[in-house]
Amino acid sequence: MKTNDQDLMLFYFGYQTFIKTADDIIEQYDMKRQHHRFLFFISKLPGITVKDLLQLMEISKQGSHETLKTLKAKKLIEERPAEHDRRMKQLYATTEGKALIDKLNKAQLELFQTIFDEEGADWHAVIEAFAAKRPGYEIISHFKDKKKSD
Image 1 (cartoon, rainbow, N blue to C red):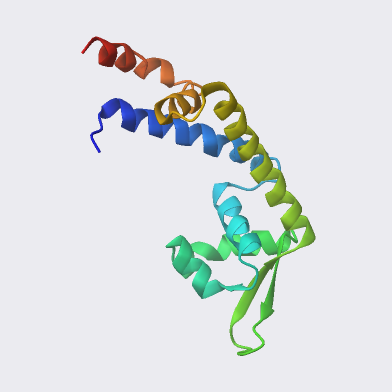
Image 2: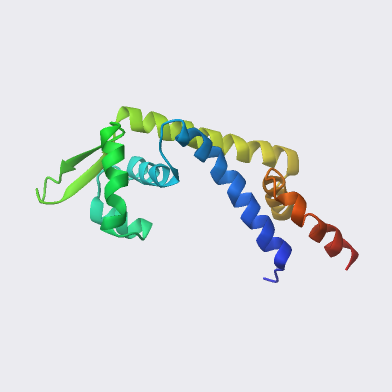
């Protein structure tokens, strides 16, 4: 696959738009992106162990402590001992946690649907539509005009 700097910049801005959609919602609950990621995987993989969650997310136990503590304190997840080994802790989203992840997912999926409805399935058009929603996109938009003239 041949790529150029514009593709990388478009992807960066497109990703920022996608993430910002959920970030704006999760901030209303006094949480951050990491809480969203934890809650997402815990709700989609009920019963995942802390060890497996950390491996999946590629983070250390030390890096997860505060996030898990916050999610438990807000009653978005619960921790239960595994039936096969009581020393292992399994994580589950609560009803409130599932409702929040559904809200976050819905916002991101609606954004995707809107852009696909407007742009079709062309990757460049879709990622550019995501990117164009970011304030910094104007700074790199000249790359598109340059590419057309090359």
